[in-house]
Length: 211
Ligand SMILES: [Zn+2]
Image 1 (cartoon, rainbow, N blue to C red):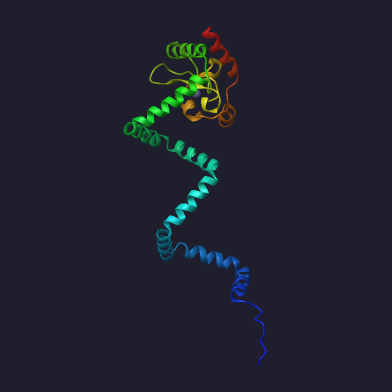
Image 2: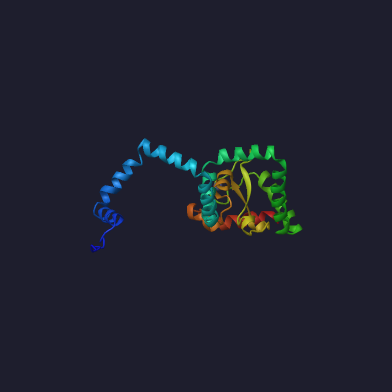
């Protein structure tokens, strides 16, 4: 009976040791290999063969990181807002029922969050904004010319974030500010937009003009 000498190291252990000693070299080799056509072709073949599995994995990851994904998507839509808006217009033309439902939701939220007096005051405010001789943007304090959709009414705290339809929560904004603010809270918006001196005073003046 010959004695069995225990094998001290497995092949995998040798590999691990080699990798530890030559880490940088190995990483560089791997990086170069991943730029090669050979690897790209292999990758494509692998992706095609495992499409369903990868789709499942992606879905799982997305549902786990929903908040993060939503933020990234929102930023992407904002970066490409012209294309996004064009797509949305086309989509609602093709699916009028969807556009109608979205409008109904906005309307329901508005009705739930406001009294009749609020709505009357809001309409008054819109009329005032559209017809008054001169008005400045609530956010950037620049005068806004009349007509052409330049003067927009903006909810200071967005309705979707619990803001009311009460006139105190409504302001006149230029197209640019309104577009950039989107559904941000004022405290988030002012992080990227410095408000001019005296903006609160201006807001109160606008409110006073209503009464
Ligand atoms: Zn502005």
